[in-house]
Length: 473
Image 1 (cartoon, one colour):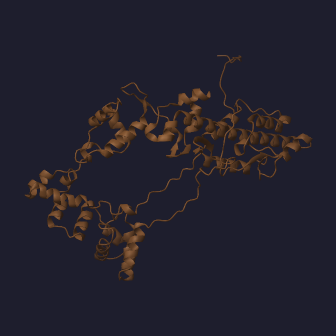
Image 2 (cartoon, one colour):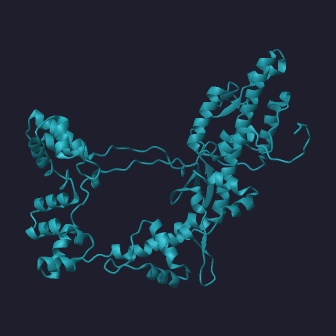
Image 3 (cartoon, helix red, strand yellow):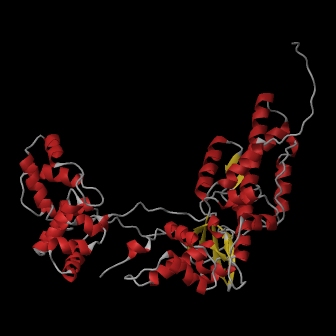
């Protein structure tokens, strides 16, 4: 087979580094953008942070008010005209946006918070231990035991394992454990659910019949098979129910009240605030520095005194700085436009709450703003908006629709979930509603929904089925 050359013409799509950077910045949250800007200030000498005093330098509209975005486009072109810098295919347009930097709104919430450290289970138990008289060896054993109690209040290792680790006698560890198990909260340091309940029954001085149910009929108690317990113990059913009520009031996880989950803090990328009776979109630009392209390096390029290698380096850095400024501006403006579109389409949500959320898909906003659906998806992912009803991810406002039987406006799936949650909250705990009965309740409100859909929404809300929600007393 002979080798030969041939020319072939074809069409293809290429993603330039500048476009890749714009897409990357578009996807960033406000905290990630702060970090990206910080890295750029370190790596790019042509990018500077403005103090706000130098009014002659062009600053990125992403961090200051712009009367006309076309003015920014002209400035950016002038800053690189000597190098024929091309901004590419991203269209900035002429619409501006409001931000926390150029607006002084009292309605915008402050970040200042008063934080306090809650007492941990370890601290609470050690405080009680220090109030009692003990030897140095017992102090070591107690600290080891308390340090191995998990967040639910249970002792993880066995007494034998602790004795081996501390090289002490098993009976000494058992004696210290016995004392700790009588501390507050009742049932702490137990090694099983059965032991936890037995300790609480002992502390509460309950009847022997309560301890008998815990020791011999725990499996029937879990399934609420009171009839079986009644037959095996030879007690009337009403008496068994009274005894089981005492057990159900016990705490199966003694450490629950001391467990504080890791707090998750969301910094909103945008605010929707009410000013003068009207809702207004305001971008969060707190913490974003004012950026400008260094005029010193541009002047050195214009002089033509730089060596070719240095000239190439400076030219690349200037292009990178300009592209970063434009990408940031494009990100801010796109988020602003998308949020305004959401505000217009979901105005009832902002006025009345989540129950009045309307069906909306990415294509609705994409068509209105003449953007691609993938762009809307990038903008709404990992971006949060502060509303009068709390902080929500922008994706929260996009829901499928549930049809009404009376021909009225469709309901968003999130609104239907909220209705199911409210229905379950109002139900009779002794006769909880089945999924089919919830369907009938929704049907009475002119909402057509299948039973399997109700089951799916109920599971998404972490609501147990009716058989496990039922209470006998």
